[in-house]
Length: 364
Image (cartoon, rainbow, N blue to C red; front, side):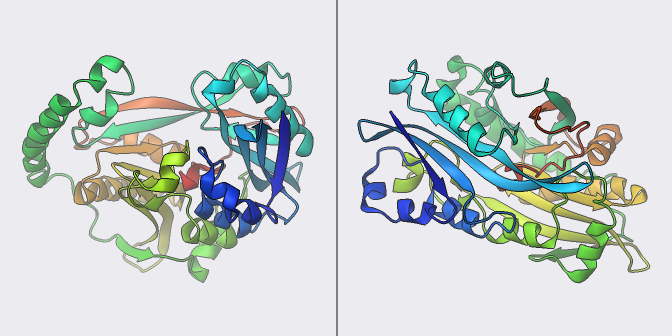
């Protein structure tokens, strides 16, 4: 087995090669490679992809997203684990261990992990390079019936019943849409002015700086505009050639990523967020705002769910999730969920001062 690392500077050679076009499994999409090239926190020599080759075939790969973190009052280079895949045909040959060892050596053990696959935490803990996981508590709410997407991943028995579940969703949502139409008690404050943007304005940049001082990652205008302009998910069909060959998400039937600025009746900015909609799921990768505006902003988000016919919302940002949990709303159901974070022993990190979009979450 041979493990080859690829840097920001060399990844384009892979994605434009004749070999890439014939691979059964691709380790990265072309648009994700382009996004890496524009990462304002990456250098050309940063190793972002490690591929294990066995008999000239890809047996597995690991992706890394370069970033930096405020550590002991100074900026320090770190990476986020962004993907980890081993071909089922090569499992049992310690390929995952070899790949991960190469990644940690290349990044001086300074790799952070979140949004990991269920059941993989113990794999990382066994390396003895990580502290015990920390968990952020969030809220997930459902505004529309979506059983056909929620239940099949939980049990194989539901996969056979997808047509029936879709029929139930269709019938339930006819009645639910009528309920939401007549839900007069749920209105956004008329004094809250909303402005949609595709960039970070100077006013928004100053507003963000006023709120991100305590964060570990502190993404600002360059990083947020990079997220907006160079997404990892494109609108399209899963049936296209590249998406079929890539194990992780690369396309969605609907993908929206947009800045939203909020102003009070005196035309003063009171909130800023990036709203992301992927298919039937709404998230808020980044949020900054005044305490007094949180209730109205949560109402706005649920109104967006109704207008965009989105079924599910997930928020881990503590102030917004607490407001969503306390607020009486038209949500059919809501529950608390946990997001794990693994921090390496090489970094003296305490607490969870992360935004929902930190790591690669803003891209997925």
